[in-house]
Image: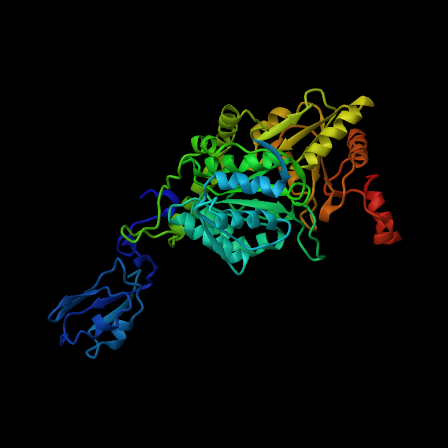
Length: 85
Length: 400
């Protein structure tokens, strides 16, 4: 997208700009042991974990791979895997 | 109407006629009279503007940045350390493409403390993205402000403009200055039409974060914008001539350069000393010419190549220096003449208000005409203040 005059932009650029490229590890939601406690949703600093019931996933367009969701999961149902895999 | 007035008053009168909506400034010699007059105009009801008293130059620049971002014409002025304190905001104003106009009453940088004139302050921000104009006399200094708003606010430009005028030499000198009627200025300078503005009803983000994949393109675009302002500076000088009957040059002002043996290249009031010295030298058979750079940013590369590079030796006269290196402007002239064999000498003179008499310029003429080379060569140093050893070393530089 061409840069507008003086770089002035309308609100909402955080959604338009994909920031997930920083990530070196990605969370993999195994969907085996999930009890629907939503701890991963609450702890995610990017607010990019979406889902309902017992099925959640990270939006990898924005996920930075910080690993908080995997660390907080009481059922160890989220695994961090290196991006190159 | 033509009246005898102080240079600062001429600038204030002209700025008043440009109808800025916001003026903010912090007093610093030799700029103070300009904004003092403007505050008086606001108090008297002669200028419908908000005059914001601030606690520092940093705030003054921040206020005019904010005002300009809300879509109104704004104005400030400063000198020397005030310019340095503004530095961060100066870059922001340019990066946000806000057509603020600022008068810089050129003054030396301390320490040692000096209130007197040189160009170290404005040359220190030559790469900030502002258009820089340098005035030779008070009529031009006053006229340049009307031109500055018209140039900066042109949608093809959208950049801030710094009008540089030599402190004391112009700001405190009384000369006849022709101040036009309000209607004439209104016709030349229509109301500012911003390309964007801050408005709570239609929010935008300015100065947004750009990741490495975009930042470079953003810098390229502003670089292009400064370079492309060059024809607009010339166009506006021509329109000003048509409207007011005065023309002091476009990007440059060439004086007796056609057949010159040595051409002095300089800025501001030093050009008028050089022109008068050139006339005197020509009576003694020394063919001197003067190329005054009226617009230093964007740099008039094309005009310099046209006027210089025809066989005349070039002596660049600078009231500033790059410490430990030498000349600031001379290397840019050499760069503009890349590929030509024109010798370009750089001389440092007039720092901190040191007088530059015509005899000094004749010494420089002789030095350059003799084919000697110089870059950052100091002129007229005094033995009693240097000590014998340093003085002898400096004298030896003149014989290299």
